[in-house]
Amino acid sequence: MERFEHGGDIYVHAGVLDFSANLNPCGMPARVREVLRDNVDAYAVYPDPHCQALTDALAAYEGVHREWMQATAGATDAIVRLVQAAKPRRALLVAPCYSGYEQALEQVGCQIVWHDLRREDGFALTKEVLERIDEGIDLVVLANPNNPTGRCVDAGLLGTCLEQARAAGALVALDECFVELTERAGSSALVADNKNLVVIKAFTKTFALAGLRLGYAICSDAELLARMAAAGQPWAVSVPAQLAGVACLGEHDHLERSRRLVAAERARLRASLEACGMAVVPGEANYLLFEGPTGLAEALLARGILVRSCDNYRGLSDRWYRVAVRTPQENDRLMAALQEVCA
Image (cartoon, rainbow, N blue to C red; front, side, top):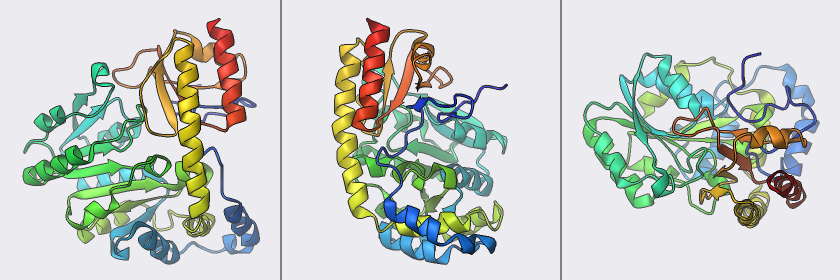
């Protein structure tokens, strides 16, 4: 069987405790479960192709015009639609990063220009990236926070990137799928003054809705959004996904509890990893990237714990791993297994 290149492959590894997929450790909000259960009869009809109720709720949540919103079947769907709509010739990617960007760009024959993040900088994005944003670049893809490093983009540097990209005639795709579980503010407000900016988010991580496939794009360029809408199937967002999305956007207390839990458990998990001799990247997301011994993933899997081996990320070797921040009890299991392996 071909190796699955992403986290969350619990179908091959049944029964494991999954630290490879970075979902909200608090899980799906209880109110969302109720909405999904109580509206089963609605699943028999076609979804609203325009996602009107969801779009209204998203616009209110993000504080932008509803015309700037587009719901999608997950963030990856938004990325693919953007690439298909823009048809970039040359795109700038930082490394390491989510492989879905590269895969989407390859589908349109786009040349990829890589900017490698450096370990000595803690894998943080620095002003050196600006040297790569020139008139030959059509699309710049950034993530805030980055996956797998968990590092956020400095707000001042992001603003400069947007200015330089605009001067070069380039679009900027900003993946903020994990920002809601950090202590940072998102960048949705920036689309008002930057028509070349597309912010991409998802309910997958924020509200643990990975199985429902729900994401969205925010952009003030109506023509680009129309091309993105035409780049995929007309009923991409299912009825249950739309219902769940509307319900999620009212769960402010759930999200705040989740942020507090992630912050506390991330710090505890980082301390434990470092105590075991791991070199941990100081990420701000609901996951941590660290360097450990070769074979660690296999040793943990033998103990019923699945972690993300990062050897398929550009610039990372088979000594790099990513683990999600889960509940205190689940994190205790991981820490105990790590201590066993590293003893």
